[in-house]
Image 1: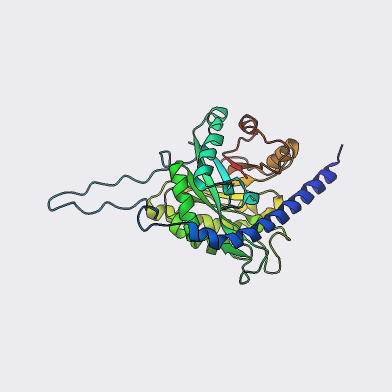
Image 2 (image 1 turned 30 degrees about the vertical axis):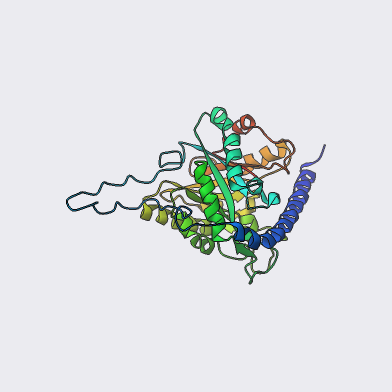
Length: 332
């Protein structure tokens, strides 16, 4: 039987191998972007995301009163994500299977598979399920890319996945792997989509490094104060647009990945979730989850499942037996 130190070393070696494979996939993704973008037709009408939370237009004619526009809803109704729903998400990037299940096949096909995977959680968790597509919008890179060590996906990609998410009545979550860039700056660059009622955000501190480090070679982290700034910014968007509650996921698999986590704050209109990304066998995954999953109701809890890296994928029923029970389940 392996000692705890040996198990920890094994997990770290596997995590390093995973980061190397992801960086290799990112290189291929960079080469494919130009060709893929050329094949995406974004119309000037129906392809443009419709704005939520707008005010009613003035009357249709003289003497007619404008009808009030109801506030925008979540994809499957209502304006509050938690505790009314459980979120089940697919994670990934376009045409990059090594970066997650969402990148396999077309967005529409991924949406259909997501709905199928999410369905058993309704019965296992005894709660409505809200599907979500977690699309890597800012992608960490081992290349400098102007000193950022990350690049932003083309706007057409985000629009394409938002359309697919809406067909599946799912949320779109834009994932940020900033490299040496700043989380808040990258979040502001996504404002066009974050103003939509069905678009949330995810932060990936593993890929947030200092000015002397390279993503994939160094394990990144984030300060609680930086997360608070992003959360406050999202809260402002929710307030200004009278939007439904907005989901903010922060990924974590080591204690030091979120520094000063106890200082995280809750902001109105934002559901903040710590998603625990341990992988390997069931015992290791459950141990990492128990160590890092927040207690109480201040922060939501998430749990990630890896199709390739996990040793035997846990079933929805097994996931729902976790204590505390996760509010979010992400498949990569």
